[in-house]
Length: 407
Ligand SMILES: [Zn+2]
Image 1 (cartoon, protein in one colour):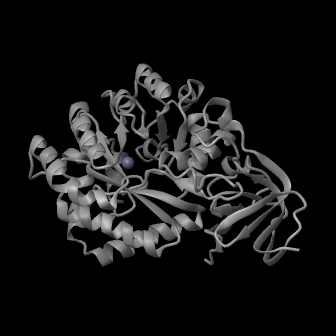
Image 2 (image 1 turned 45 degrees about the horizontal axis):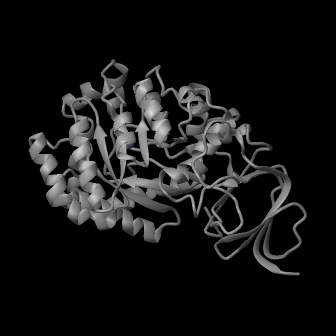
């Protein structure tokens, strides 16, 4: 009998997410590929077998009776590397100040930019590692991470280098995005800053980034400026992503379709025409329900319209100082309870579709033979418990690249 490194047995439900290796749309998002009373065999960092009654000897056996097993969560939109915190803004929010109000009073992003500019890289790594540890504890095994709290070459590079060091040293894999166009620094006029991004920053940051992102929003970067930046990024091999239509509809969704961006994120105010163009081009909509939640907004992105009209939807935390959560379980809860996604759709959006949104779907996002063994075991009898039993951590064990994580 063959010996494997890890054998997970007696699993109540394995959510394999097995299916076509492309972003899942419409009813495909409800198909979790469930195997009941199944087992998973792992050698090194790979899944080598899945099914019922697997016969292997194992160095480590895990009895998952009464539990579910699924791919590790993929958090496809985070701003994980930043310095300081902004808990004092909560009082302002409770007094009815909008995000733009706080921004216009010199708070918001500029507070974090100042803190991040002043931090040394060791301190930045330490602060971010705390968040990565929490993410892992809550079942996230891969995340995307954006720069954007530097807004000058030196600090943008510092953030991306910190992400590289964290990626190399922490169990979580971090896929990096350059977001120099996150806001306009006070010392620049917008056109001069766009020039600085393209001519000074991009040639230096491109080797540390897979994606280029722009905060395309009223009062920040308009569609034309976003287009110029993202096209310049494309020339350096950076795949476009867009923060689109979060506060007002500026045509960000349509721009994502035009540029064939891998994803457009937020989409709270996108027009139906813009969304239809995204569906036509297969652009992934990354929805971030914790953002309107943290801003105490009643309105959420129209996930139902997007899924019903063929946009492949992913969900993510948007972890940042203005929306601080490491928990993808909480995001699934918000997706179901506030965006009317089904539990199965939300799970697909937090795993396989999320892996597509960061271009990692050949490696992660589902439990299939040959894929990397990024697997979590949850203390619940079926998948519907994830949005149902909320506000606690259901994760019982985390396996990353075939290694059990000890907390
Ligand atoms: Zn964001």
